Image 1: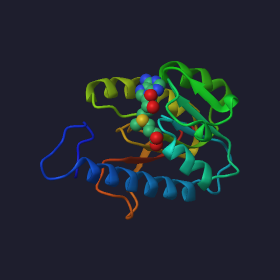
Image 2: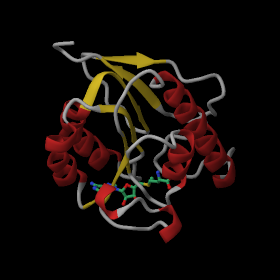
Image 3: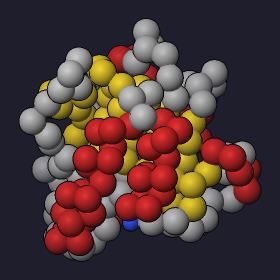
Image 4: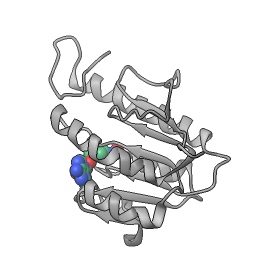
Length: 178
Ligand SMILES: C[S@@+](CC[C@H](N)C(=O)[O-])C[C@H]1O[C@@H](n2cnc3c(N)ncnc32)[C@H](O)[C@@H]1O
């Protein structure tokens, strides 16, 4: 593994190399996830708009899907923002909960790119939002994420061979009643 996502710099890999591995991994996982959901009907969710890189990739991969985007603030250039109606601004704990009424059981693909350099804080965030994400997902929906979100009824999927040397996770959601 090249990095531990913690932001710490190791002697044997540069920040540039770490970023390349991360981006290659994200692209490979999102490409595969788009194929996996091709037969499912429903919207896509991007948790963590950031600079809009992965959102822009998703909307090009899935031009006919509704894509709902969540972040607490806007860092992305205007050209990489969704329509206002598809943008949830605020803490994930509040906004994902607020979206349940609109999206319950409908989401076919959710990408959560939410990690920070604070692993403990990330763990606490995941503990709070993973059950909310579970409520959004449809049966057989795919979750792609930079943080371990495993749940008993989610199947861990191997990363695609095109993924880089970077920690990422893919799950197929099996609804408890599905
Ligand atoms: C790693 S960046 C996302 C990068 C983005 N996917 C891209 O490709 O440009 C993580 C984003 O998650 C957001 N974020 C982290 N924790 C959050 C929280 N608790 N609520 C809302 N947004 C959060 C940050 O503001 C940041 O924009």
